[in-house]
Length: 325
Image 1 (cartoon, rainbow, N blue to C red):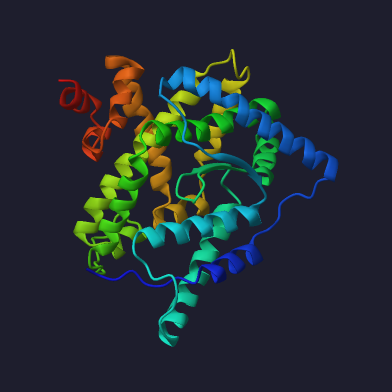
Image 2 (image 1 turned 90 degrees about the vertical axis):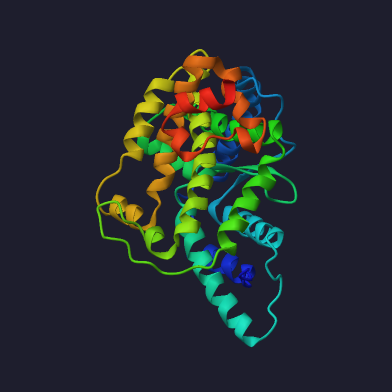
């Protein structure tokens, strides 16, 4: 078993916070109104998600409306908690560990800084206190770029993250299962391979060995279910709750379908996996619902064995046959 190395999380926080742009500067009164609207949307989302998902309950958590810098701090804390659960060293053992850990911290900080300008919200089940994180500057920026109704958009964003809260509340074993999959992938001995170059080749294809890619497929299948499920449930809430939902959906899908260098870099780094998870997972969920309804789809959260494989994500009929007979 390969030992998971030390990461200097304090350096990651400092680098990330130092690099991130703060976003549009607003008057204090306008910031207060924005934060209040997002919090109100988070509270309202609970009832709607419970109704459309039919999941039993949401995970115990708190709601935090953050700026980008504080989101970076929150993510660094969660990353440190996850690595601790994986058995990583909390402190450097020697000068070499300090040097390597600092280098890793810089890399993590740069990555967090880049992501912090794009993410709208996140349910974080890995912190000591589970929490729903909503990033106010990004929500404000996107709603103005897409020119959509702010109140509807706030609720629409919160519906997705609240759905994730219900997934982890209904299936409390899910958190540990995800950690165990990450641990299994990291425990495999890494080895750089050079697959035949193709249009879809990403950096992950180079740095992961075949065993790690198999585990990554398992993780991706879980994420596809969770992200696709949330996407479908957001739309099932309907226009009675979010009157401008079709407008928001069209604008957001156009935003996802970005082209140019952003798409090229995303493909190279493997970041397009997230987009595929939304679309493939949503298609899977719709296919299952057509056959066995939402309650039948919820069987996926009954145990780890009931989760779809990556092959089943692309073949919902196979999952229905295996799980529902």
